[in-house]
Amino acid sequence: MKLSKRTRKFVHQVESIPSYVEEMLPGHASSLQRFVNAAGWVTAGLGAVALGLIVGRELRLRYKFNHQTPYDFYSHAGDKMQDVEFGVGV
Image 1 (cartoon, rainbow, N blue to C red):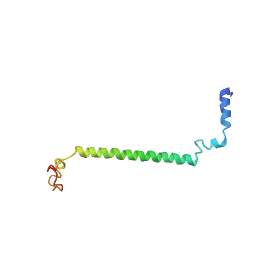
Image 2 (cartoon, one colour):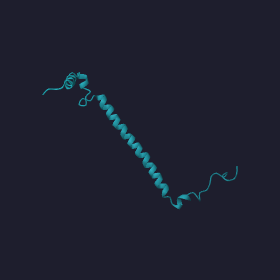
Image 3 (cartoon, helix red, strand yellow):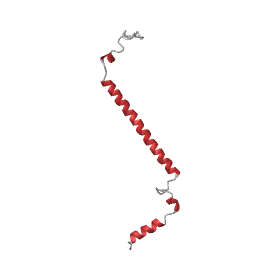
Image 4 (tube, rainbow, N blue to C red):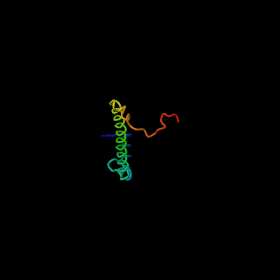
């Protein structure tokens, strides 16, 4: 099988890859690459958890607001006020 000039040039380039580049290929991940990869996954996971907490809190607050009872509106109606100046005009 005869290869074209362009393919032969590419095959020659692939055969002459230095050993330090071969260590960086996907099959030979360095410890730094593995650490960065793991840190990326941890960061993505924490971001998803934070987003879930924010969205969950907002949904819970909206649900509680939409399901208020009349007792919730007047829950402090019988409380004794500590601030006497309220409504006196001071």
